[in-house]
Length: 368
Image (cartoon, rainbow, N blue to C red; front, side, top):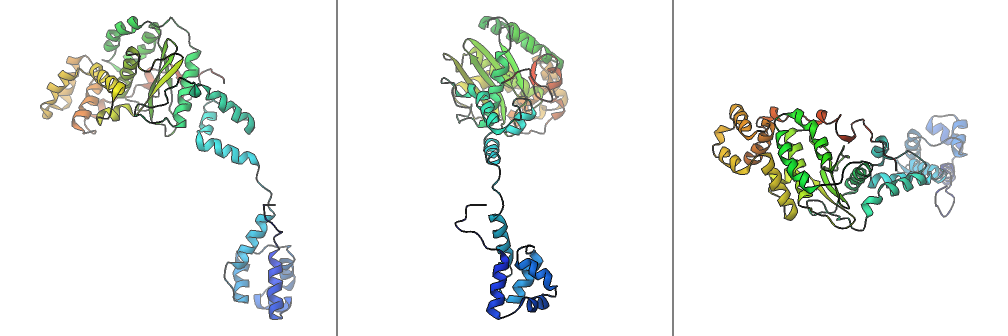
């Protein structure tokens, strides 16, 4: 029973009061309604509920509001309906804050009794509560809870990875090799191994709904981690986000004692719109330069009639990159996002066998 201060009477009691006020008998009302007296008696005694059709019929017979008896029946039924399982409210609270059902689907959490589920989630999110965590995104905003959940998954996976100690000089030298991989989509398959040899942990975790997260630079003490979501499965976006995160690493952005992280949200769109500041501006400019030398792009962009398929292919050949990477830069210059999109090829397929991946049906062997 719900928290009423008194027991709610049956609708039949109100029907009887209306009969008494008019000095009608049940037989009189049954005649008026065109039903059997026994059927009416069951309604008055509460053995049968008042249907919506009967509610309107009674309202007409007694000349009262159409919804009077329907509301009386609803109030009576609610008062005698058991309270819902408290776990429902607790699960709803979890789902409002975090995409818990999606996290269960992906194997990040186990679907258990709500108290154990809450404990699991608290343990899962422990890395987001680190005292040295820089709780900002690249846009200077507080990260959303789904973004923090994604970040925690990246950290959990990175902690299980083994490899040599991080070498900043090795990563700096590796930029030449990375550049050579930008000519063909297939070259992307070599990126994880190249980064691993530098002591950098590279993790790909499918993004969570509505998170809009592109990547993250995480420091586990002296070990850098780059996490990417491949939110946009395009060659231009992959390389821009990767170079953006590498820039954070090489500039030691956000590194403090303990753990720290920089979550990058909507990276290329913010760069395209000219939205950046501080460390993000540095990372954006260096990422763009790694993709296509900006002085060369400026010369190429002076004559916009040159943005043809042939011209873009020729320019990409000269720059030693895939045409799709040039197209991504052309889009920024022209704001014409429809140009030559056929070159924006998908790349995730080239990482499935060489990268540490969690998502798209693949679950990293990590338990909370």
